[in-house]
Image (cartoon, rainbow, N blue to C red):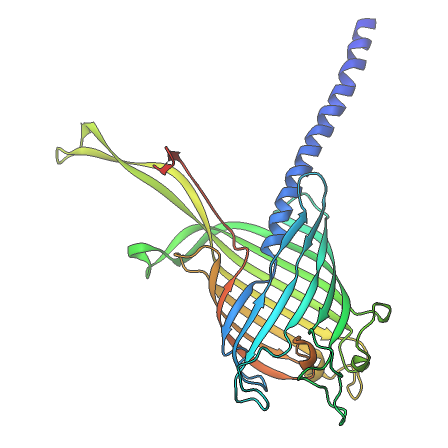
Length: 360
């Protein structure tokens, strides 16, 4: 009996250690997987000819430059940190008053970073929190207001600091999907194995007074916004085969038997649909809380990535700006249309068997 007790005393700690090790491994894998989710849900960069068509100002081109630097994002912790500076640029036409050299008038700089905290280990139904801090400026130091009290969009100072808190959740769903094929079947609808990525977030954007901002913005700029973001992305799985001929076995035509050998599967994101909505909650001069024309911000995007690209897409945007996010132009309100090329962290991977560096 003593021997049994000693054996149990020896085995019990080992079993606890084994369970803890298994849990730790699963947690580490989840930490890695969530970094990919953070990347996939990052806003796309884009170039759009004619810019925001419908805006009160005429543009040759608009661009959104959105790099992403993962600073902390490995297996060690469920906490991840990234730097995510964002720059919006609009090249104006010469037809605008005072513009004669296709200028980039007051680019919109958002410099800051994001911290993520994973809530669940399961990536099929994922949940996480995010908190971001940004400094938003236009790089100008002129007076924000003209003598007549209007905002100086030529070289007027725009500066604010803000926090962005979000609860993020979504699903990864595997299913058969019907899309256009590639090659000779490019214009033919076929069923393929696919994965649908759905991501949603609810959040608050807050520009607190103690962080400081341009005084002229007080009572005229949205310093507290409710935000909702939605992403729907389709990734298609392509099975690849290598054709070999058996010199021994002959087919009915007395020729070597043809065999298709599976060499791997590639994953390519084909479609991405995004929707963003915001509503200004703070007090605004001459605008009550139900003034949708001033407080509502909406945008929908459709991105299609052709088979011959990797991380690029053709996109179309439709939206309405109750408050333009382009710094000192924030008082502009308009419906708009945008078309161009986009790029981002689209889902794709290539894992094929290789021999001497060449795909079999």
